[in-house]
Amino acid sequence: MNDNRQSPQLPLKIEGACTSPDWSKAISFAPEQPPVLPMICQDKDTAQVLMLGYVSKETLTETLNSGLAVFWSRSRASRWQKGETSGNVLRISRILTDCDADCLLAIVEPQGPACHRNSVTCFDGQQTQGEFSETDVGWSALARLQRTLESRAGGADPESYTYKLLNAGIDRVLRKLGEECTETILAAKNSTITGNADEFLSESADLLYHWLVAVNALKRHPAEILEVLRSREGGPRRVPAQKI
Image (cartoon, rainbow, N blue to C red):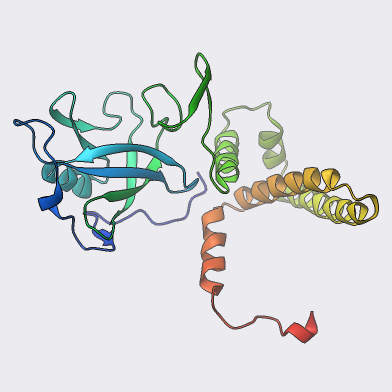
């Protein structure tokens, strides 16, 4: 995986609107069970909401110390680490509280499907047996493509176009990126003549794909580029308007 982002330091610290949850607002679902608060798990890269679970004081402390999502199972009346059996753990990047301190948000890196149905999220609609329609939000499809590229780069499918292109070397990757840039520009110009943007949209998708391939070929991660964009928000103009 070409991910140069730093791993979070353990134990994790609670962030967000409040520095700690308000356990006076926690609910006990049965007399013999500890009071719990809800914790939403959101994918760090795709921004998809993966699942909702409940944490007790003890399981939240374990989560903060281990960096893995640990919940209180109401049905089992016991501690439950997500993925302890399946291996599909949720690695915690950050944990935040809401403004009322009665709900937690865990930003996670899933190591497999989040749902027991083997779907990416617990909210995905089931189309047929074993097939689901993902609950996309924002640019989640692009983040999923990045994960696919990482898998292909690692040799998951040696016959794939991605694997062969990356193994052809950086010069070939960049030449293809340049070709896609030109084709996208031409398609954009054509759309102003024909009034049809289908070709432009298709070429733009090809351009995004080859841009991601170049990012991976250079052993970088798209998140690093997003950090640069974030650093520019609200900053001074980089190019005077009259020079555009």
